[in-house]
Image (tube, rainbow, N blue to C red; front, side, top):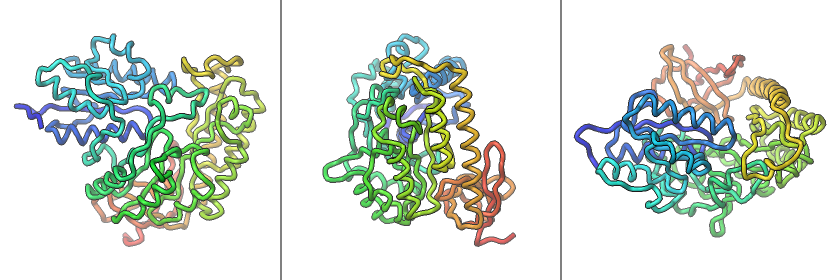
Length: 437
């Protein structure tokens, strides 16, 4: 451990996916272990780590805005830029003299060592460190109530719109024994909900274990915890995958990315499924678990998307009853095949189509929430307000609020769902089954 006469302060800003969030949490743990004080991003700090996203042009712009804001508010502090934008625009970022270090994804786990060397007066380039996408510490100090476990990185799908294979590399799976040990340790550290994450986790493949077999091993581990699966691709698992969700430690929610409801557009995107095969997956789950909650991603305005193609997407997402739809307006990314396609859609039409999907998403969400009224849900308390109300999420990934005498976060409470509170951020009022005020 490298110690300082005055404890150095480090802050973090994370953009993008759950994988970035996990990697930031792992860095938070490592900095804490090495004697740094972790502070909120709004607080002046000696070091700021910005974990960027580059999946769309808007993501790039948000990342640039955060970088510019950081160097203005902490002009004398170290600024470390990492994440996918650091891979995609490395030379551009390195030319910015206000950024101290630009660290690619492969060496992100080495940031603490890099910062330590800096304060020892050593001049070290990030690329002198070995790359290891699984080289992160077990999360102890986290910025979140739940924690993630990284089981996989990279992607070999090469969807025509996607730059991720260029910035995350080819698919690689983490050894199962490392995953199991990591989960044992985070459970020992007190975490109650573990999110299985990666770039394309459905392609997990280590020795004789695919994702399904790996999860079967994970749920055998002792402890009072539950497992949530992060975003998955619909071509990433077999016909029996739904059966693993019948285990009591598995949460009945899955973010399954459809992207389009038009088979023609799916083919142009190089998505390896049809709308029929996608709907078959949903039906196989709901046949066994009728309340199973599906959420999804949709891209509108892909090159050549006609009014008919978009109408098919709107129809499918209604029929699929996704409780939430994360809608992206197609963003051209240099180096992808879609960027070179003809029939690029104007931004006005993209915005109009995005709004249509947003409205469908809101209606679907309220419909699903209302259908859950009267049922029992196990809530993991994430926040307690000064009115004695607990805030948290149930196993179906529904936001719930309820009065309780409990003043401890990160514990489970069984509640009865009573009433939907609509609005910009709808939630469900509930009653704590063990408390009647």
